[in-house]
Image 1: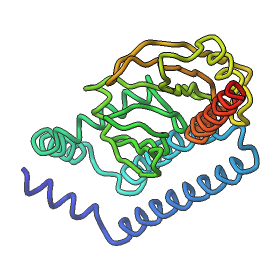
Image 2: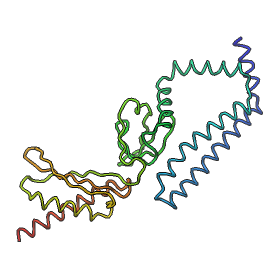
Image 3: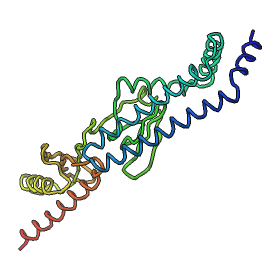
Image 4: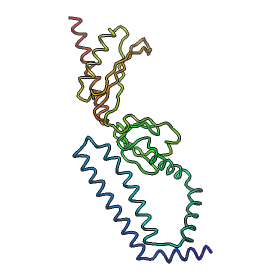
Length: 262
């Protein structure tokens, strides 16, 4: 029975059918490349909608490859039901025994399609890394960290760990800036100065609130920590915002101390 099935499968995989299947794969790949290039052009023209347009490509890629696979199987090869069931059974057994981790990643990817914890363009803590989601596959997610490293994280990490999403599909996100100061400073005036500096930064998104809070901490001595919470206009400017506000605050504080000495 098994030999008959293999013989039928070999007959189905004729040279002409393999060429047709190859043409379908090439056509699907070219179509995806055209869509990707087109979306990149649209993103450059309308950067405000970068996240929305970037989120379309993963779904289109999955849909096109599923259509291509279904067409190759049922439109080109056209195997009888006996061979379909035999191949599916063999694949299921092989996958179950040899690729348990891969199946777990695929299942997590399918779950993420119907209940996405993040999308392309989101800044997330995922799999022990923090960065922007640049690509979503069925088995892995690609992140670009703030150090410009590209990280491939298995989707099974969604099932095992918590996922923190900093912007949830928006261009703006909250940035928290911690500044430690001596305990002897004037708290009220320093808080007001920090708030003014945060609002003066060109990277701040002022349509959302800016807050400055104070907490006590100890590290070799008693200190006060200023916690500045401000939204950035674009998630990719997170570090520039943090650096700009810190620099402005230190310069303003030094000027304030110089005036008080004079």
